[in-house]
Length: 101
Image (tube, rainbow, N blue to C red; front, side, top):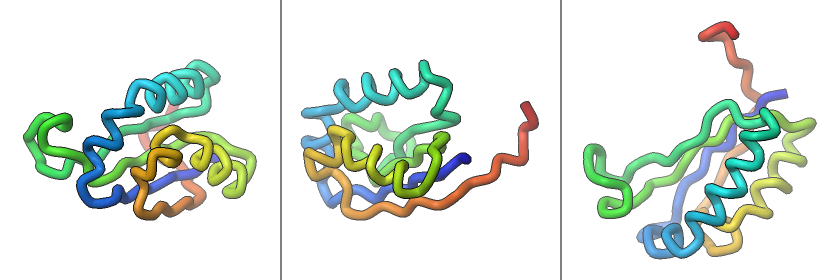
């Protein structure tokens, strides 16, 4: 089943994110290669400004998991989680309607 993981960053998360960004992206790329990730990306703190300058407000990941518990465990193994980037997160089942594949 698909799950949406909505993440809110701690204030001033930019330095923490940049320290482990490549490790985070490499981990996601592996999950993409397995065909599990349907979409993933950050929310800019300042719209229209380069993320590495304006900062991040959080992010969204939509991916396949067997359960919400599995999604949460996966998230807790992410470098951003270990670095203390996340203020809070929500995990919800998600049903993709459009576009149809």
